[in-house]
Amino acid sequence: MKRTIALLLALMMLLSLAACIRVPSPNKDAQATVAPEITAEPAAEPTEEPTAEPTAEPTEEPTPEPTAEPVYDENWADIDLDFFKEYLSSDITSLHQLVKDPSKYGIDYDEVERSLGTFKEDGDREWYTFIENTLSRMDRVDPRTLSDQDKLAYDTMRQFCELELEGEEFYGYYEPLTPYTGIQADLPLIFWFYELNSKRDVEDYLTLLADVPRFFSELLEYEQYRAEKLNLFMIEANLNKVIEDLDEIINAKDTIFLIPLFMENIAKVEGLTEEEIKAYEEKNVSLLQNEFNQAFIDLKAGLEALRPYCRPEQGVKATEDEKYLRWFEYMLKDSCGDTLPPEDLAKIMKNSYKECVNNARRASQMNGSYPRKFSLGTVEENVAYLRSVLDGWLPPLPEDINVRYEEVAEELKEVASPAFYLIPAFDDWQNNMIGLNDPQSSGNLLSTLAHEGFDGHLYQYVYHRSMPGLSLSQQLLESTAYAEAWSQYSEYLLSVKANNKIKIYDMQTYQSNSQLATELLGYLSIRVNYFGDSFGQAFDLFSTYYGYDKDEFREEIYDPFIIGHPFYYMPYAYGYARLTNLFATTRKALGADKFDERAFYAQYMSYGPSYFNLLADRLDQWVKAQ
Image (cartoon, rainbow, N blue to C red; front, top):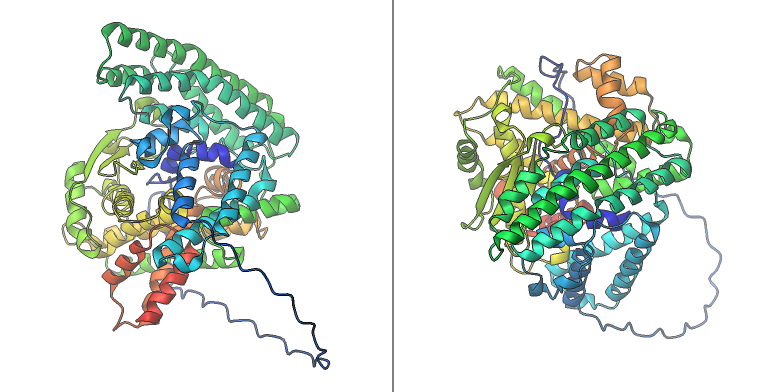
C-alpha cells in the first residue's frame, strides 16, 4: 500500500519517529536483573569456498558480437527533482506540511488532488509504474558524472525503488490499523498539524474533512479483503485497542479538540471577512459532528463485524504460509533499512541487548539505580542542559533555529505517543515543533527531549536540511530506522557525556534498561515470526531481565507487539543496534589511538540519510582512506 503510505507520509513518518515508545518498566518496580557480563558474539566466520572440480580442456569460444555503447541521456539532478515532485504531489497533506512554497520546486499546487488517498489496488499500480519509469531513467545516467555525494543519493533511490517493486506482490499484507501508530490514531493529528495560512488552506482543510467518509469506506473494504481473502485480519487484542481508539473520537463528538483549534487558527488567517470566518466555522463543526464522527462509527461497526476473522495469536512462521513469510522478510528490509539477511539482523540486535545488560551492570556497580523521574525542571531548562552537554561533540547547527513546544490535546493523550517531532518543511527548516504528551507528569522529560530535540531528531533533520546540495529525494526517502538510530543514540550519548548536575549512573541505568527492552522486543519479533520460536522461549528470554509473569507478558508484550504489531519496535531496536555497531566497527578498524569520536559523528552526518548497508560501505572507504 505504498501509495497510501506516501499519501500519509508527513504524519506516518512523524508517529513512526515518536520519541518515547512505550517500553515496559524493568521488573515493574525495580531495574532489570543485572546478569553477569556477557561477551557479544563475534561476527560469523566466512564460509570456506568448496574446492573446484578439474575442468575439461577449454573449447574455443566464438568471438562475441560487439555490444552497443550505453546511452547516457539522463541527468541525475533532473531525476532527483522529478522524483521529489511526484512523491510529494501524490497527496495534499504531505505537500502542505513539507513544502511551504511549492513553486520553488516547480510544483503546481492547484493541480494536486485534494483527497486523503486511496486503498484501492489500482492506485498502487500507478505508483509502481512511476517507480519502473524512474529506474529506467536511472539506467541512463552516466555514473562517471556523479560526485561521491550524488552517487550515494543515486544508490539510495535505486535501493528504494527496487525494494518497492519487490513489495508489489504483497497487496493487502500491510496493516494500516494498529495500536499507537494506526490511521485511527493518526487521522485526527493530520488535521491538528494542517496549518491554515490562507483562504485556500481553509477550503482544502474542509475538503479533506469531507473526504474522511470515503477514505474510511475504502479502508474498511481493504480490511474486509485482508480478512476474507487473505486470512490476515488483526488479532483480537489489537482489534480491541483499535476500537478503543475509535471510541475516543466518537465519544468526543461535541467537544472534539478540532473544533476550538480550528476557531483559533482561522482567526489568524489574513484577508477573511467576519462572515467568511463564521461560515467556515459552522461548516467545520457540522463536518466534525456529522460526517467525520459517523465515519468513525461506521468503521467501528465494520471492524466489529470482522471480529470472527481475527487471526490466532501465532507468529508468521507458525502459519506455514510461505508467501506470508516472504512478506515478513521483505518488511524486515524495509523497517530495518538494511539488506542483511534475517540471521544477521537478529545477531546485531542480540549483541546490542547483551551490551545493554553489560552497561546496566557497570552502572549498578557504581551504585546506579533506576530513577523514578529524570527532569531538570521546565522544558527550557532541560533543553539548555542538553545543549551544554551534547553540542560540543557534534558538528554545529545554524544559529537561526526556532522551536515551539505544544502539548497533546486531551482527547489524544491515551492515543498519541508520549512525544513526537514534527518533520520540518524543506524550505522552512528553521522553524520546528515538538509535541509533548502531558510533560508535567513525564518521568523522563530529559531523555525525551534528548530523543526529540537537541541533539536527536531535531538536530539530525535540521543538519541535513541545511546541508548545501544534499539530494532532495535522499532526504525524502529517509527510513524510520535511520532516523530512530540517531535519536536513540542521542539518549545514549547523554548518558555517557552527562556531568554531575544529574546522577550520571542513574541516567546510565535508565538508558541501558530502556534500550534493553527495545532491543529484546525487536530481537524476539524476528525469532518468533521468522525462525519460529515458541511463546515459552520468548517468555524465558524476556523474563530473564524483566519481572513479568506469563499472563502479563502475553497480554502486554507478546500478543499486542511481537504477534500483533511485530514491526513497531523494529526500527528503534535495529536502528540503534546498527549505529552502535558501525561506531564500534569503525573504532576497531582505526584503532584507539587513531579513532576520533567527533570526526566519526561528523563523517556519519555528512553522508545524509541512507540505508545502513550503503552507509557501512562509505564508512569502510573512509577508514581505508586514513
